[in-house]
Image (cartoon, rainbow, N blue to C red; front, side, top):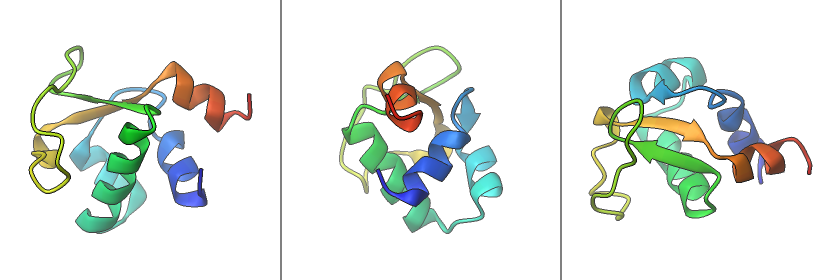
Length: 84
């Protein structure tokens, strides 16, 4: 896990919207989406359509409706983030 992914996971202990993450990270869309996509591929985060339900739509990076979604670290992601 690289430094940017660690910083992003710091923000995902609780459900966050794309807008909240973009504001907190102060990254451009391409950078944020790249790291969200990478963390999701590693199963370190969940992509959600609302506070409770997982996104099951298109999994291609350019087809995901990023601005409409929410994100949360998984148990696997939190364990990796904390060095276990």
